[in-house]
Length: 219
Image 1 (spheres, helix red, strand yellow):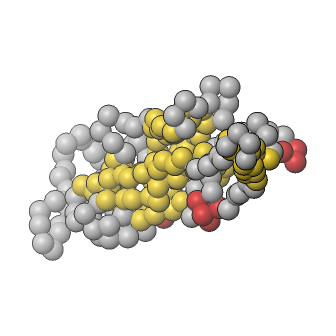
Image 2 (tube, one colour):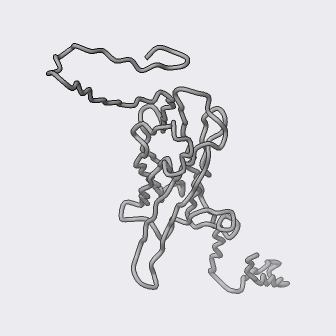
Image 3 (cartoon, helix red, strand yellow):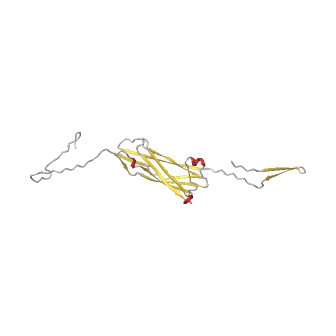
């Protein structure tokens, strides 16, 4: 807590019957300033679609990554985002929200807030470029094929208003949201080629026909 001490002196003048009041220190204005960490959160989510069969929980892997450094040398401050999440059974993908604060308190810092006070540009803004992507190297089913797009560029803009002390956010989102689509297919095709030789005379085109038998269906 912060406190100031003042002394009030009261003298009684018996001759006039008037009280004389003085304050020590004189003409002093005490200012008490409270600071608070204005905060805002930026959530991120995506949708996973698998055409051809039912989607399984935790089947596919997604990342949200980005980094930005403000300043140089010992004064440099770096903000890094590196998240990895998997889908749930209904196709939902949820990343941890990015949390920003201005003049963040110790409690906010401990809770993972990014203090933008020293990151703002001349427009009182902090811009962070991220990439949300499906990690296609983690696809284990050989019958699953990724369908573009497999990644999205995301811009997060945090703006501080000195007049109100509040933060606001702007995030670039696709019109239909962040959607990652894969295709499942077990239809394989194989190209077979043969060569016919006829000894004794010249082979005429279309003279002979060939069949490839199959135990369960006609080819």
